[in-house]
Amino acid sequence: MDSEESTKGNRENSPNFLILIHPNDNVAVTSMPLSKGVPLTAVGKELTLLDDVEIGSRIAIMDIPAGDPIIQYGEPLGLSVGIQAGQAITPERIERIEPRYVLPDDFTPQEPIRVETNPPTFMGIRRPDGSVGTRNWILVVPGVGCCVHEAEQIVAQAKERIFSPDKYPHVDGIVALAHIEGCAFCEASAQRSTQVLANCIAHPNVAGAVWVELGCERIHPDAVLERLAPNVRSTKPIRTVKVQNGGSEAAILAGVNYVAEMLPYADNVRRSEVPVSELILGLECGGSDGLSGITANPALGVASDRLVRFGGASLITEMSEFSGVELAFAQRAVSREVAEQIMAAFRAHKELAASAGLTFEYNTSPGNKAGGLFNIAVKSHGAIAKSGTAPVSGLLQYEERIGNRRGLYLLVCGANDLIATPALVASGAQVVCFTTGRGTAIGHPFAPVIKIASNTPLFNRMRCDMDIDAGLIATGKESIQDVGKRIFQEILAVASGKRTAAEHHGRREFALWTIGPTL
Image 1: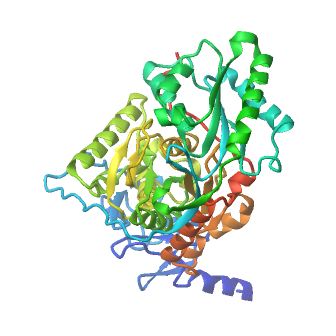
Image 2 (image 1 turned 30 degrees about the vertical axis):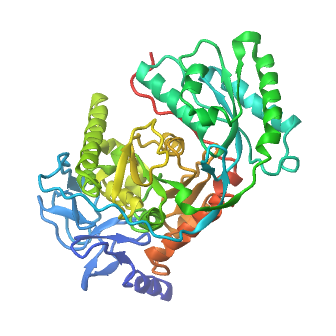
């Protein structure tokens, strides 16, 4: 063996190489890619790696006979089909454990969190209706996918002819809320989509809005206006153009003129110091890997807990990514009523999947599995870590705004990142924290999205798309608490106006969550 191979062997046999999450676990996580045959040490025992593995893979640290549970986070994630010490945990080597959807009779509600005094502050934008924003956008909203072109042209021509950062330094920009919905869907989807688009217009990150109506769609501007609170309608400029009244060119010209009228009003805002209790944080993950649940997600959970302790709010979503932890999450509820609502929502989402012939296992992507997330249970145990340890204050339906409620809330939504991230914002989040292990770079049209890498190789490889490296936890250079504190400080900085990587790149992803067929 030459000196390079010897050094590699010594490094790979270091105590930090396998990460044991819970003392009762019979699997550990690799902190770097490894080759078959590498000698390892776990809980004082020597073993040999029997498979080539990627960073974040789960490795059996003892023999797990067929029928015995595979345990991580101190919880069973599936049943072994017969796994030797040193083997990687793969989908073919496990059998699923069906989760429970019923609360135990001895359920004990959690005490609501005691809010701390003297909260930190950030520089926010106080709106006339009393809400606080972190950004200042003019929104152009198509009522149907058929007039996305007109909406985007209004934005493009307004930028070319009338808007510049030098002329309007307090306006973040003009953006179209491009989507493909608005027609040929069921009434329930029409009502939900109408409410979500109304929520976007009402959002405190939005200074004013132009609604672009085709003229024959299911989502009507009058229905949107009816869903806005009176103090929003009376204080926020909202204008409508109709394509079928005079054609595309006339609608675009009218829209540009409306934007020109709104810009001086929007530019009149100034940031002021506000308590962090005014902040609503969206918790999201996408492109997760085997380290997400032990680095980025628990660190984000620390930041979320800190926000909730200071009187703020956090929203977590993606219902299928609670598979196997539904009961554990519900048992954090502040009342049995809230816990029952949570369990009912999980049952309903399972039935929704079943109606399409699917199970929650379809949530795990090829990238998830390649990164060590061998089934939905292990992915969910890691995903739930974003919520920290705070008690769960309540449940929000997809189209529901959080308003003045505070604490940790579960938002009902599917697990597509391009749907879930906009859902968090529409429900009130002014900032979103998005963890990723494989590398997902999406943003949002009018809310900042902070990207947190679960591993340092990803952070270095996609440096232009990432904001925070949580991979230092895996290498032992920082603790979960350390990174959690850094995330919290970054949230305050971004809420005060600091640009995220996604904002620098102009990432503006948006989609609506519809149910039922396209008719």
